[in-house]
Structure formats: structure tokens, C-alpha cells
Length: 124
Image 1 (cartoon, helix red, strand yellow):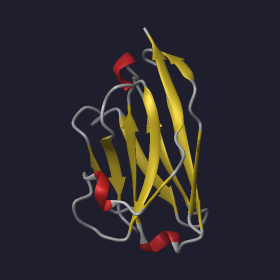
Image 2: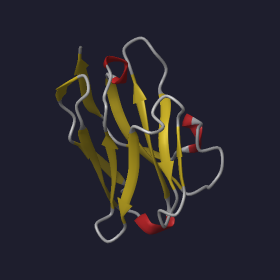
Image 3: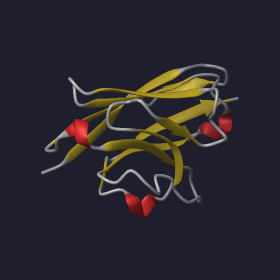
Image 4: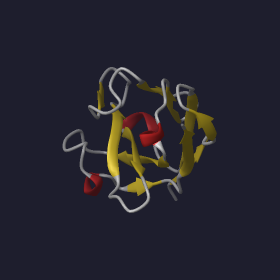
């Protein structure tokens, strides 16, 4: 079955950096769009960014543009989220997700499978 396993979450000071990883199995990774979402306590899950099958296209939430970068390694079935200039408001559980469709990428319901999440905490 499809499994997505995130790693790399940590406690970091504001202005710092983290790189999250999401290892996928049980699917043909290179045929799927991958995305990152996040969910802070008491808030809805929100789109962070997505990357197309071959990595040629990316999209980001306005709140992270210029600070976060998504990349993927199709040889390793892994997607990454490089997070720089972190802010306290970036604190959340970060989830990776996969979809076989190339549209409506900002919507939670577009995605077929989700990881268990990894906690990112940014202290001020």
C-alpha cells in the first residue's frame, strides 16, 4: 500500500532553517504530483507548496514564497521542503501528500494519500 513518511521536523529559532523529507513507497512516484501542507493547532490544514511529476513546475502559498523551496528526487522516491528564514507563525505539523491529478493542487480533497506529519516549532 502507499506510504508517505515525513522526517526532519524540529525545534528551531526564528530566522533558522530546516529541511523536511518525505519518502514514498507503494506507488510510481514519478507519475504523481507531490505537495506539502501544514496544520497549526486550532487551524485548518493549509497548502504550503506543490511540485509536478518531473519537478519542472512548483507552486507556493503566498505566506512562504521566497522562503520555502520544494524539490524532488524521483530516483529516491523522495520530496523535500527546504524552509529558510523561519518565523514563529510557521509552527505547525507538516504533512506531505500525493495526487495523480494536476489541478486543484491547493485543495486538501485533491490528495489521495497523506503522511503522518512531522512537527516544526519555531521559537521567537
